[in-house]
Image 1 (spheres, rainbow, N blue to C red):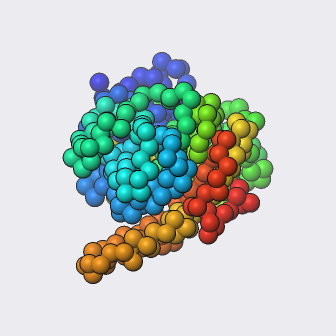
Image 2: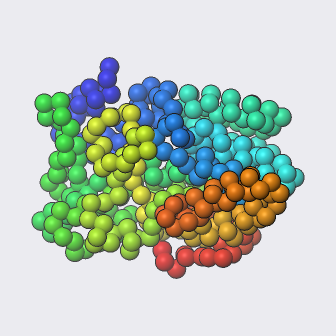
Length: 364
């Protein structure tokens, strides 16, 4: 059965429009058909988008330095949604060089195809460390160490809201004549976990992510001690709800081209929303986490000494390549300022090196 038919059948059986979060869940995570659960090659130059680990090994090497400071010879690492497995390789390789390997490197992965891809990648590059890697389909209980979520929050299904008649209402998805379209729900949208702007222009559209907030809470409950590193594109609440951001943050990606139409290429294109880091930080604190740091990806990597890898490279050609990669990771016009890093800690007192040069917690 085609994915479009599964979604339209769900709407008809429901007897009313479904929430956009439900639509997004179908489009991304339907077994065998959803974007992240199919066999298609979605990462890298041949895919639909390039993540920081695929841009440069130096990204993972820098993150590894932060991990080494936290686990300090004892503890594990848990990576969510490890994509092609490239970040896991970078972190394990660098931690090996630093003589600070974790006892276990857990990968939380729901896609069987991606799990196989990750396993093959690690076996090819670091066969001697494959026994340290373990794949999970649910959160481990009593986890101690570092949790890494690079570009995970943006792919958690979100609700869409529109300001209509002086209040926010939910934007659902309906289906007429086999065509999907937006449909306003009637009742005003309220939720005690979300702070929405009060006065907006008619038609102002935005997103809220309740599933991401629930995920943060479940992480806290699964951990005994450690730090969560959330790396994603997003912003604080004031910027997120800026009047000029009147169409929200919904973006779709297909072969390195962006659009804002989630109703085409269903299951073939990525669907994302930017992260409201203020909402995440508030929920994290309510759950019991301490906020350990918040900064741009550029300042996080600079604080961890990413330029030292460049200085140590003696080959001029390789140094030129590394310089270009670093620019992609840190320049404001590239990934440097769009991406942020938020660190949440539980029973962890170490002052994190990644926020030495910048800490914007007061902006949240």
